[in-house]
Every structure is written in C-alpha cells, then in structure tokens.
Image (cartoon, rainbow, N blue to C red; front, side, top):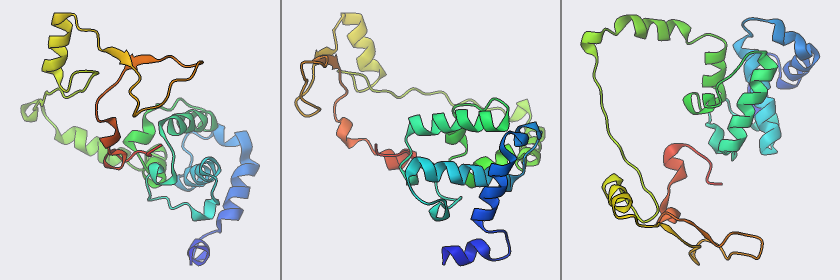
Length: 193
C-alpha cells in the first residue's frame, strides 16, 4: 500500500533519493532547497538512524515515533546544517518535530504565516505568563529546593537500589530525583530511551 502511495502521482522514493545523492554538495549552493529535497534527505537520514527502510518513514509522524532520542535529533540538526550549508539550531527538531514540519519550515513555506502573525501582534496585546516548576534531588518544587539551600542540606546520596547497581568503575554517589520511573516521555513527544 505504501509503495503504491509513493508512486502515485510523484517520483518514487528510490529515484528521488538517487537524484539527491547525485547532487552531493551542490545542494549547498542553493539558497532555498525545495521542501521535497529536504523531506527526502530527512527521510533517508531518519531511516538510517532508526534502522528501518526509508519507505516505511511517514513524514507526518514525530521523530520520537522512530525511537530517536535527544542526542539523535541534535546530531541530525548538525548533519542537516552541514548538508544545507548553513547553521541549524540544535533545538530545531523540538520546534518542528516531524519531517513534514521541519522540511516546510526549512524550505521557507512557513515564512508568510510567521510574518503575518508578527504583523498582527502589537504590544497592546502583550501578555506575560511567568511560572516555575521543577524537581531536584530531595526537593519536589522550588520552595523545597529553596529550603534545602537555606538550610545547607546536601542532596547527594548513594545510588538508590532501584536505579542500578554501582560497579567498581562507576561513581556510587549522585543527586537522584524521586519517582523518576513515573516520567511519561510520550507526553512530551520524546523517545522513552
């Protein structure tokens, strides 16, 4: 079904991937590569990183769906910047978490919408929402953390047995947050690795 979709009305993935590989570094000279060229590059790269065929990659699915963690997507941003010949923010995959969204942004397709939003905004409309939420070792919120600091409490402890068993080569001490096993990576759209 996917193969039929790939060939319906557009060049098949293999032919497009070959076309891009033949371009090599010449694509770097283009100021604005096409959305399709960027999509093809990202699809091939994510397939390579995830160890799955590029044909199985869906441009609308989040990078985390392919098991890519933060280290992977930061590395991907670096390689993408080299391929495009321009600096790319390491956080780009968090702002545009799918191939489709990232390719559209990098190709400039989102530029007009972004400009329209900026023009519509005025300082009379400005609003600031300020808050702080955090967890630290031995502190579940900012107030508890402030108390730890004020009272000079050392939050460094031995590795909890529920985390791992320290070996001779590892450090048996650290700062450990309680209930880390209850973290929900899917809520944040990140890989559970």
